[in-house]
Length: 238
Figure 1 (cartoon, helix red, strand yellow):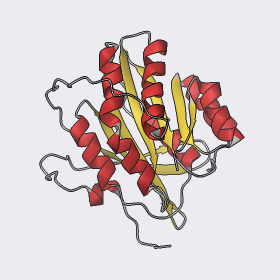
Figure 2: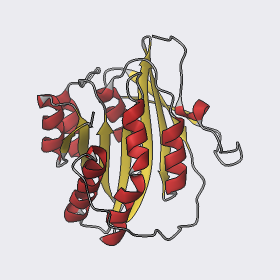
Figure 3: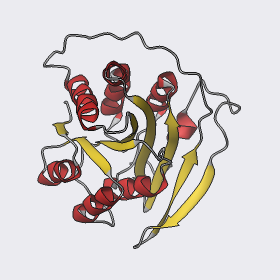
């Protein structure tokens, strides 16, 4: 596999340097090892009305069903009227089709939240591992679905992955609204690995009151992570 690092920020096209602010490096001690995530700020945008549609779900639309069901679960669990949702995206070499599927159905997920009156924001955290280095980027929360779609489609997939490291980094660095409920949606097709154990990440998620939904593989650890944090598990569509 290539040893050259590829990041979503480098692949992002159609957004000028004036639109995406210069990322600020940030590092934090996470107890076992210091990791650094690139925080990418997105400018505030006017909220555009969404044309709400209720497409008939098909059994073959695995990602569509998963995202819509997660949105409905968010609405059922929400107590504040606000939800900050972060897509935790595995950007390793085999993930391109899954990321495109998320981009394809992003608006349908938003439709469900709008229908239920949830004031939501979407953020994106991408992660992969080149050699011995974790590559983690955090795109800040936004209401701009077009921006999110472009970021997802610009991700360059390469290398391996350490999903547990990425979740820990996101829990400590994502800037949530103080009065909003918190949700992660992990999308990966590999086992959960990292310097933390699944049990440690579950504990960190509970302490930060963050639900972790998993669109992944048929693995007990994937299901445990979702169940123990109040999220849902879905098999990543083939």
